[in-house]
Length: 224
Image (cartoon, rainbow, N blue to C red; front, side, top):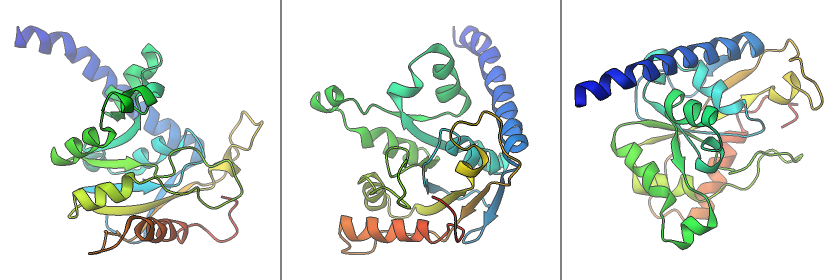
């Protein structure tokens, strides 16, 4: 039976790899996205890449600029209600990107579900993560929305894991509202110096410091 299951799942695993490569090439072609390893080196060390969030393209762009040997162990944290909405998303999210799916429905919380558990389990398995601590896309004129507590909870629960600020630049300029064809601008994903929760540091102080470390990576004059 295990051998039969492996035979049946092999085509899906192969398809997921092909689709993942295609997405990576498409993102690079449309945005000319390039990485700027400003505060760290692209080495296979366990990290949580926390980024600004302005479009649905944010996660694929971070994922696509990672070296292939790192990409295999980096898992985006994403909402289960979004990625399980239809069969296509249910394939791309869990199988192509290997997302850590979090159930954010109120009824799940009322039932006692802990949304952090899946995240901590992924870290304990050795995975690195991509997260968007603002929670929702930032459609305002402010540089960042207030961070949710998840980043602080990860930093206190797993203090040895690097929390890496990751700024995605030029996304809104490449695809302005109302446009269907990307503009020929270069998008940059900048990786800054890791932050950690300091001994005795409270949640609000840490989240403010982590947000400042992220905003400091933004190019001057960019409309965030």
